[in-house]
Amino acid sequence: MNLSDAPWILNLRLQGVVETLQSGPYWRFVIIAAVFFAAYLVHRMGGRLARRFVRLNRYGSRGRRMKRERLETLRGLIRSAISFFVFA
Image 1 (spheres, rainbow, N blue to C red):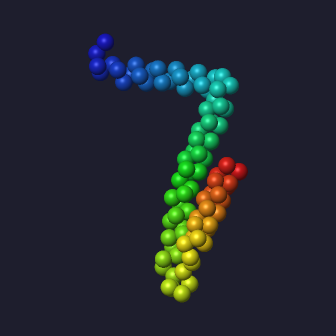
Image 2 (cartoon, rainbow, N blue to C red):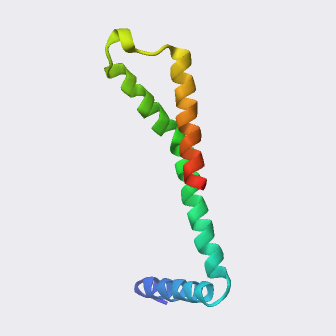
């Protein structure tokens, strides 16, 4: 076996795996698992997204800025809303 044959053999093996997944009831499971994995990733990034939204408070005038406790509450609400909409 030459090293130049390795990508072809690997491609053939991957085609066999994909054909097996598509032919049986596994294909639906793979799609459902992929969608839930993507939703899980967005859920995990929800905290970072919420932090960015709350940081927009910095650009307001000093008299209209919120207290730290209120910002933490808002961050938690945004994080929960992102998780809810991702999994709903």
